[in-house]
Image (cartoon, rainbow, N blue to C red; front, side, top):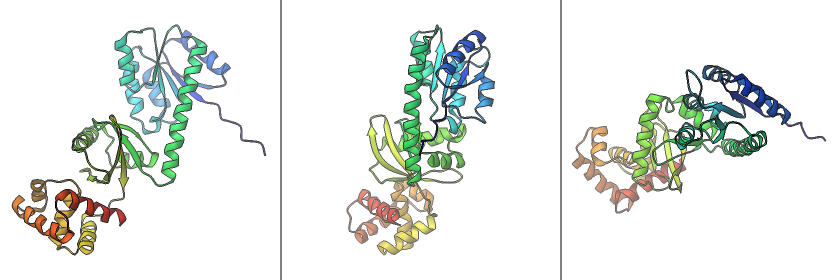
Length: 303
């Protein structure tokens, strides 16, 4: 049985120079790629609302909206999260290289463009993007709602369903995203142990589980199905044979809250919270809040 014919890669070229576009179009068509063209940033944004190219070639210096701003807006589109963006410009100084990479670009080509070098770089970036996308889709199909952030709380990557859930909860919007990043930054700064949970304060809360510190700049997290606070409290109460109020305190301990924060949430004094903790430690057979939190997390995770 013959293998299905491979779909040609689709490349969006964004450049205000017609001469440059004609040259790049000829090069890419000879390489077997499908070429889409935009003469300005707004056209590129309109095209990508309906089509997700495999790669974008973007002129850095254009009238009106420059390439750096276009790149930032393109990367705000979840459908383009894995789409590599290569900047093209006659400027080769370090400042513009850094601006392009910080805006979300993966590479930088200086004009006049060498056709063979351009195609070779494009092939490498499209292959890497395809591999990353396939891996995340495979994790998605296995039900793993995974994502990674850096130590500033900025999203590095996410499996499709994880990104969709965060987008649906408004966590990827500009306004909520700032608070979300701040919450993640604070959480990571406290060096959470694997299995530790954090519940977002968004309109539709999500529970995040810390999995691992992959590197000094990448932290792996997972979205978990949310049980309502009342359901989670009931699970803890039944499993550990604690009182309802002790279960309330234990739930918030598992979510990394301090005695003062728990007191504000449950409308009791920090001293009363501490008294409940003393009873919780005895009933769970543990010596400190870290061990109590770990036990609660295991209980809720199994459930």
